[in-house]
Length: 286
Image 1 (cartoon, rainbow, N blue to C red):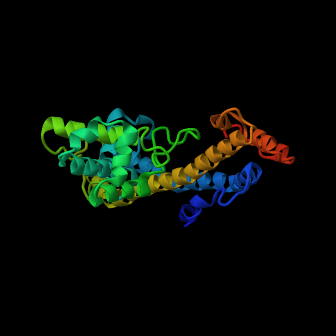
Image 2: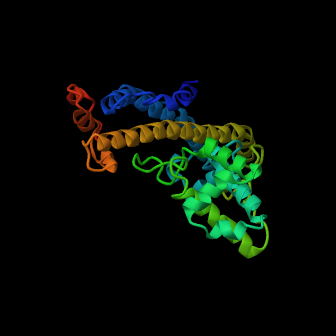
Image 3: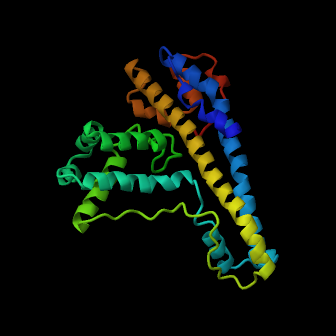
C-alpha cells in the first residue's frame, strides 16, 4: 500500500507552477516524499533479500560460513524464472513491436532512417504499431539506461536517444535473418523446480524448497515492481528539474538549461530568488 501511494503522485511535481521560483518551491516541497519513496522501496525490497538468505541456508545445509559458488549458482537458477516481473516485459514488448515493423514493406526504410525520423514514423504509423509503441511508453517510458542518474532523460522524454535506435537495430536484425527472432519469455513459471548443483540439500530440504520457492519468486517480482514505481517517481523529479533549468535559462539566470544538474538544490533556490533556500536540506546528490 505504501509503494502504491507513490504510484499516484508521479505527475504532481511542479504541476501548474508559474515561474522558476514557484517550480523550485514545488520541487522543494516534494523532496521529503522523494526520500520516503526510496525508503519504502528499500523496505519493500528487503523481503526478496531475506528469502534469498533462506534459500542459501537450505542449499548449504545450514552451514552459513561455507557458502560456495555452486550455492550462489543454484539461488540464481531458482530465482531465474519469476512471474510478473515488471522489467521482464521490456524485451518481449520491444520484440513484438520489432516483429510487427519487420513484416511491413517499408521496414528497411524505418531501420535505416535517422532516429528522430523513425520516432516520428512510429507516432504516425498504422494503429497496431502506433498503439503498441504508445502502450510501451505508457508502461515503461520512465525507464532508461542509467535510470537512477538525475540528468539522464527517460525513454518517454527522449525516445530517439536510445529506445528508437534499439528498436531499429532489432528490426534490422530480423530483416537480415529473414524471419522472426522472438525473445524467450523470461517470466517463467513460479512452480518450476530447476536442476540443482548443490550436494548439501537433503530430501527434506528439497521438499521445503518446493514449498517456499513460489513465495520467494513473488518477492523478487514485487521488488522489481517497487523499483519501477520508485524510478517513475524519480522520473517526475528529472522532468521537474529539467523544466526548472529551461525556465532559469529563459530568465537569464543560467547560461545553459543543462547546468541545472550541476547545482545543488539549495543553489538553485538562491538562483530563483528564494531567500529561504539556504535552509533547504543539503542534498548534494541533487
